[in-house]
Image: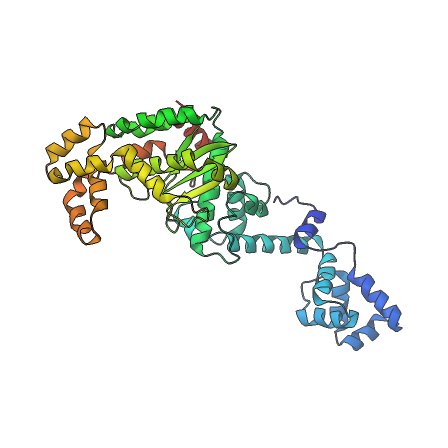
Length: 398
């Protein structure tokens, strides 16, 4: 909220009724009890006359809580009512100080400041005016209190949230805000998406440009895909959103592996195909994090496996998995990147064998950086979020 916020708005935010005056209430009570002077009242309630005058004049600089409690006993009101009436009589600068305290308290309660600093979103945890302005600009909201009105609350409705919850909420709101700003102009057609999906797998063989090519093709059929950096404490691998009535996907570099980036993409595409109605109602689904929608994750996993490299094909190649040339030729024959074959093979093995197999085949599980980095932006560290949004639009639409 800007520094020019008027007092009536501040009163509303702070829950203060500005139509009542503590001075008037005290004067009315004095008349009722036949008290003729403020000095007599001072003696009656046990408050120094100078302190009493400060209370009546709205000067809170040297008024202690006990004095307010004494006045409350004299007025025979609920303490909360007395405090609010007292606040309504404070000078404007004091009211604004209370507003700043309320906003700082909101920030501490609703944001994991350590987490935000670790991703470069904020540079300090103590300058609350700076933090407030950073949040307002990034989310394009007028008041810090508008943050809770953004998408994300339904799945994180606990009254007391952990730092993990707060970072999950921030991650979701951040992704949703970006997707909203991108505003894919293409109409979404489910039939067009169904025709496109079977054509995706061969692009896994293009390590540096295949992923971005597929992202652009999905954009044309009305599905926006963005890559958002993985944030510790979130455990989000991917997510599906409905923004402005159209499906959107967010991929993270949670694993940092090429095969998992493609697997996550197909996993989220499955949710669009089969869970569209639930997504339209709830606006988003997170894969890899707590999600109260309870969508069929096993189905999404199986869909991704089938579209990339079926179990039948994997069983056929298993006996030659140690022969790099055979695996490479088999991958080429079936239009898939060989790292996906190795990744699925390791995943299917008993836990007792996975570590040794990972060490053996890790050289084939290439990094996702060449594929995903061209789609990333500095959205959290930039001083101009909209400029970063424009970069995303350029990357997904050209």
